[in-house]
Amino acid sequence: MPFNDIFNRLLGLGGKMPTCTKLERSAKFKAAYQAWVQAQVYLNWTGPFHKAYHFQKAGISGGLRVQLVQEEHMKGAVFFYDPSIGPANFSFLYDLLKDRLQQHGYTLRSCDKLEVRHERYTEQVEKCLLTPPASDLPGTSLCNQLYGNILLDYIKVNKHPGFIRFIANTYNDSYFSTPLPFEELLEKVLQPQEKQRI
Image (cartoon, rainbow, N blue to C red; front, side, top):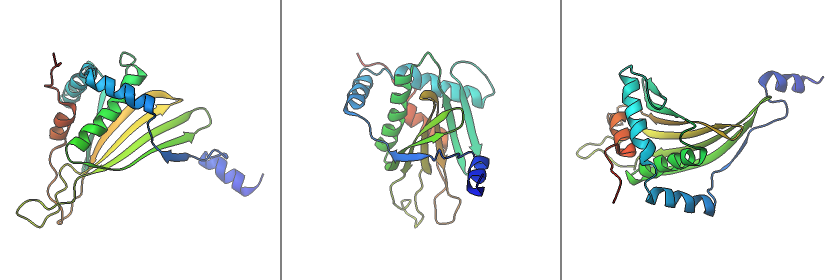
């Protein structure tokens, strides 16, 4: 066996290179998503995920599954799929998070779809990078990083929903403002106090 084949097998590539393409939603998906937003179907999960995040932070389990991400310059949450949500609703929830971040001034810099074929399964990753507007913190010469750069990932295995990772990645540099708390951003994006329109 040639050395490159051995090397590729050791790395788990085995001729199955990852593919990366621009994430583009079909017209059918967009229409269904818009109807979903108009009907406020998301209210079934935005409030419960917000509550589950705070329960997890307090060390209480129950409800939907959430994992906290709390590293020095990275704060966030991982929202795990639950069969009661349904695959289409979970995909729409991912797009809702992206759209609401943009409504709060964030700019979508890239949105890609990565597919990695492993020996026993295929992993699909939808990945969006959103950045705050380029501006100074009022009254200073510091770059206003707001909550930091936002990484939004939707992970599927064999096309079955797995989880949504929502991460704020901040700079610790004298040229940047102190980042705002992730919990504040989560509140703005999930809007747990929102009620059904009549």
